[in-house]
Length: 461
Image (cartoon, rainbow, N blue to C red):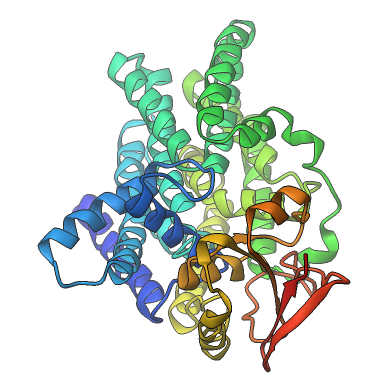
């Protein structure tokens, strides 16, 4: 069987697996499951986003829902939004197998065995991180598929100096910027690393120009994110070790990355003189890039997000690295990849990602509709994750607990409600403590609803 046909088969398995994770429950699995659907609904109903964000996928979802609503006039719009979101999410990430196949065919000058490429293809769509980025991480997943395209076309330009590769890399980087902020940040990191390694002092002018363009692009849609891009280092660092104990998959991935970094260093030291100049520089690029993404002293949340994005540069790094490592290291590397894929796939199928809250708690939250008399003039404070589903079911404005209740808010809304969830959450975030805290009950809060799962308070003005 030809390699491209094997890739197609792996892609089909990946799509089916993601469909199972997405459709094994009625709503969207994951912590942020409700976020995408309320953004899509807002685009359909009002032509803009409910919250500032990079907009491309929300508008693509809304466009597909509009088409289906014409084809299926009897279908309810909320059902179409959820179905389209699930199907699109199931398909988008496995598309990265196309640029990965092209990268394996066009970029390395040394021969990479077919079985290695097949193992890497399975790793890049069926290991822990790509399966974890199913359902509620649609933008992130599509952004990483585009990152694979960007890395392929960017390295292709550096190798062949073809204008079409330069244009493709610029377009893919632009689309990443319109899709997902976090992936855009690490894409810029790869761009800048490649410029410095390949062009040295000449790199600084294009780096500065690229950074200015990137800041302007992000600021168009979310000025706060543009400031984050410029000053992210101020809040980036911490000591996350105590939480890593509760994150075994991420910890394994981190150690795998360090193993790769060690092999990259060893290959440069022992066989650097044998390497074609292009491959030697690419290995240096991935050495720096992987070290940047896996730096152990990021704060836990940033480190966790970078950890989930490592699989894209990992597989391209292995394509270049594999011909220059010893037989023993090849066996160990391929064994790790195979074991990680098998374990992740079985875990993802047997224990698919659940929804943020249990069904009983969700039904309880739905029953509170009588307390939201005028949804357009009501704002509900709730923990992150729960707030999106409150907005989805009841059409209210929502806020997270850290936002203060000020006079402007008091004047703007007739009712200010605080929803406290007492139990009924599925554990989806690593660690004993969760950043998704309940709002604090104000001294002038009036309890208006109590159940086994929730307390609902009215803020008395």
